[in-house]
Image (cartoon, rainbow over all chains, first blue to last red; front, side):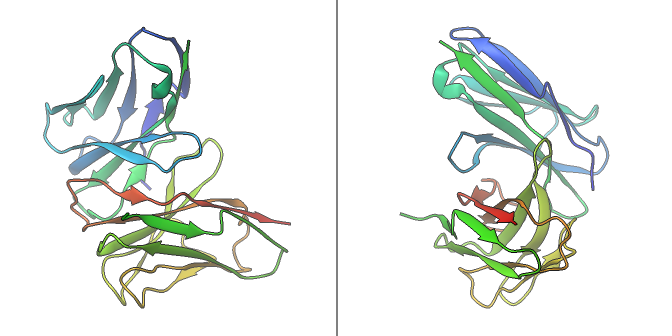
Length: 113
Length: 114
């Protein structure tokens, strides 16, 4: 089982503030990194699939960066809104088996109005 | 609408009984997966299937079994050999392993063994 860590475990953000959090993964044998958003009572939903070192992806107010050489990815939320409240999961895929995702435990974001 | 369905949403069983969790997808995806979630932990892969009539063990396959007789269906059986079966179970699918769109998840089944 590959070690994928997310920090912090949870955070509270005031509406309108921006925030970011980290996913750390093995820096060797990298193939891809996924980010998912998991809202309460819903299914996890893919946000980003990142494959290249230096990748930056954006979806609305949410963006992500990728550093495969040092083994980390940041997810940013700009101008947080209550609808951004969710658990954000990252998942690492190694080149050894592209069917197996190794998930972090997630960062739970709560946006306070 | 295309998607993944899991049933039931909540399931209660007595200790020692086998139980089967249903997962159906109409996305025409080749690959399907079963994950387990426990509090404070990431999703852990139980089994996955790349194509019909083929499946592979994930990281925590002991005490579980699966079948993949049809492309759209990937049921998971939690057997009495699973020492701690109470958990939240998620089914997922993807076009193929090296997917550029990520995995699509069902709503999950919460299994409680009494």
